Length: 270
Image (cartoon, rainbow, N blue to C red):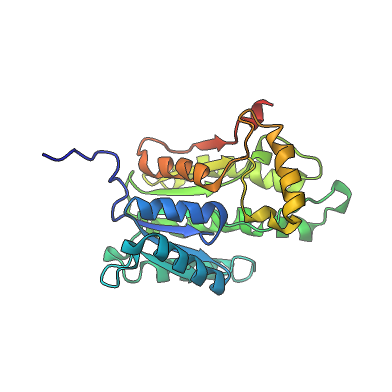
């Protein structure tokens, strides 16, 4: 006799799009989904990074590279221009589902981001306020407009958005990005009603050790990490593979809807 599988096979053959899946949290989510037997499409704005990420995933998961049944592919999308944003999103969805049965997805995960806009109060302009929300706020909201056409209409399907700790714990000079981050909490709750029965949830990570910090240089990065660890109940900055577990849980728990889940090492308590 073989063991029953009620939990470990929930994502087997699921069709999942991870926007922002070439690095950081998105890449780890793509890894986790592949490891659980899903068919995964990753996207970002950089074709060379897409190619490198797909190659790396195929090496880590040879079964996903089987030419007769490939489970990983990558597509480029440019979310940075307001005038072309909606068309880019529609094209990405069309290309993602073009070879899928019924041209439908089961899950979409949005982890895309750009450099955080730490704009001082006196430096705010309409232009830089709008630019700060282009990828992190307007893109996931406009994406939701088109998802009902491409997601299976079921409580098993989901759309997951990513915000951050500044949405609940203010940081000086972060009023602009904090406002957008907080707005994502409301976005999740309202979209859960507008997109039902498709489930809509969000993940709110605290500090996570990703490539986002690499531009500081190794010595400065480690100094920053130690400073953040001192303000975390776990005493440890999170890793992308830790946070990926939260995304997996939201994909697999058919009873979670309209919820933002915090994964921050207990930093909200400190």
